[in-house]
Length: 276
Image 1 (cartoon, rainbow, N blue to C red):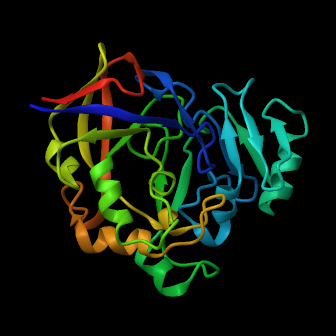
Image 2: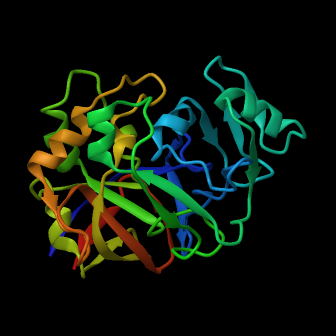
């Protein structure tokens, strides 16, 4: 059995916006309470806005969202101004901030999709150019949320530390890879690959089933608030941990793992972790 502790709990109330670190949180079928419960919809295309399409949406990562619900969440703009998501003019404010008409929604639209630009193409072409992209459907991972694949993304401190060793000073890792749970164990970097098919227990109640390594896109390379652009944030995992997340996907640069909730529970930083 592998053991350790829970180092961080994080959530991102609005899809593709910066999020927040929490001392503790309830974790249920839909993931960390308040995580990815809101999203911006592009009024021109009807698609969900995602920084996975950097040429159009990289500016989302200059905004920060905090709070637990549509009625209480808040969004902070790069200039420090803060708005409630319940503000009647929030769509006008956010449209001006991202430079494109958008609508903030708290329900997954029927047939909701987003575009994920091919990461290697983004690295080759740069951020301003439109490149080939895959269309992904949302809403199936956890009802009522905007997750792409699974409601929980976890990563170990060993994995983050190994990547950080090859990044420029100050590039950051936790914020770039956007995990919900950061785990401190005695395992080597990228041990998460070997946890697929196993159960992860955190604190007295929470049980997760580890589903697959997490493939990385161009999001990790982008400016994240005060963190500068760092193309090595994708190139380093591509060099150190290129594996096939799911049959048929082919090798991908992976950091951390996806998981689903088997048994809900409250977790807090410092809780005991075990992989069974």
